[in-house]
Length: 241
Ligand code: GLP
Image (tube, rainbow, N blue to C red):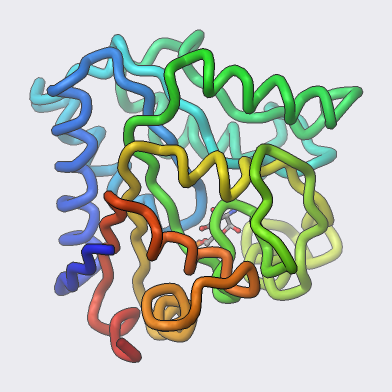
C-alpha cells in the first residue's frame, strides 16, 4: 500500500478528488465505488468544486455505493442514499439512472445482495473505490470476523459501529442493527482503491491495517494485498505508524 500523510482533511480531500478526476478524465464511462461517513466528505466537496469549475464531467459515470442500513428506505433522512444525494450527487451531473445504492428494505435481502454483486460485475467492475475505515478496522460494513466475506451480504453491526454512528440518529436505539454491504471480495476486485482517514481515534485502526497481520479480525488489513491501494492520512491518523 502507498501511504501518504497530508496536513489536514482538506488536503486529503484535494488529493483524493484528483484521483477521481484522473479516473473520469481517462475513462468518462468509468465505474466509481463510493462510501459514506464523514471521512470522504472533503473529497466529495472537491469533486463538486471541480465539476462547477468545468474541470470534470460526470455525465457518463456509473456509481455503486458500498452499503446501506437494513430497515430504512432511500427516502429516510439517515439512509446512505440520502447522504450521497445531499453530499455529492445533487452537486454533480451524474445521471440518476447511473446511481446505485443497495436497498435495505428489499423483500428478499439475499436476492438484493446477489443482484447488487451481479450488477457491479455486469457494469465491468469498479475502477476506483473510495473507503473510510471504522475504529475497529471495518471497511464498508465488513466488521471484524473469522473470515473475509467474498461478496455483498447482510451483516449484524457491532456495538462499536453502532456507537460511532449514533451521532447521525436521535439515539443509539435508533441506529439500525443490520446492514447490506459489499464484501471484502467485492472491494478487492476494484482496480484501484483510495482509503482516507483523519484524527487520532483512527490511529490504532490505521496501524492494524498497515502494520499488523492480514487478518479478518482487522478487515482493512486485506488492503496490504491490493496492488493499487493508496492510503491518505493526516498526521494524527498516521501517528502510530
Ligand atoms: C460507517 C461506514 C463506513 C465508514 C465508517 C467510518 O460505518 N459504513 O463505510 O468508513 O462508518 O465513518 P467515518 O468516516 O464517519 O469515521
